[in-house]
Image (cartoon, rainbow, N blue to C red; front, side, top):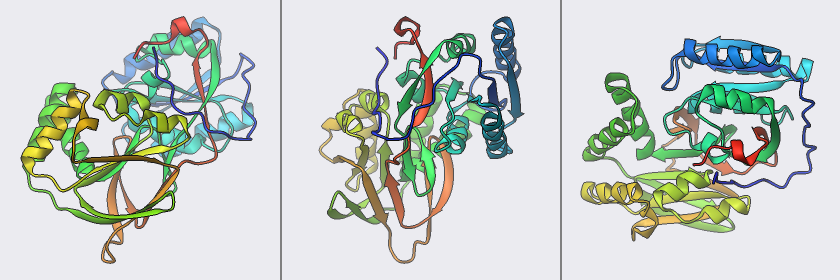
Length: 328
């Protein structure tokens, strides 16, 4: 069954679908594992056959993505349409940042390797299938996370994890996109020495000081389940889930990754995990900015870092019929 992430309690009115909305589709032709032309052809084929109006806003790679997302939002506002993100995790993230708080319906045509966000809500990675489901969808309000002023859908992190993601992308460019390439790049990255972060965590009225190589904050029950961190119930309580570890040797890091691959990371003695509604991460006085990752994309943000659950939900289009939903 598809996993259900938390639905935030919000007094904001939920948009309703009329069934004839125009789709304003931000299509990243340079992202994900599928060819841009094939994705465009699949979208056009389904929507034209259904007689549904749509407009494609095409970009290649990250350049122009934010501008295209904002253009889609403005067009959807003016015409009471639906904003659609078609691409990998970074595309979904960029478009959701533009949509959150507008009240506009949001749909996705996911093209990423892991597709945790789409799979959580039963949305297929097959473009034709996902496009057909958009035509007969309902709105489900879903929780997002915020890091400072930016949205993340699946996770956000600092320390070692952003380095892992950067190295993984480099390996994918050289060897192609697959889970085995991602695993191999992680093994190589972990072999290198990594500096410790000295941080102070303020959350839920508590303060904790520690040294660690990384902090990851999760907002996706499927990903947490797959790595074996059994804090998914926190997402049902409108919380995010923080994961960090005591300082680890290279061998211990390999062991932690192996536990994650076996869905047993939560059993590790050196793992620290907890739920929270808001958490501030304070670094040493010399650290003014720090590299972070959100949904696989790298950013530099000013310290301190504030993770939180916003009041607004994301009005996501999901398949109406449970039988149409992809099983995770």
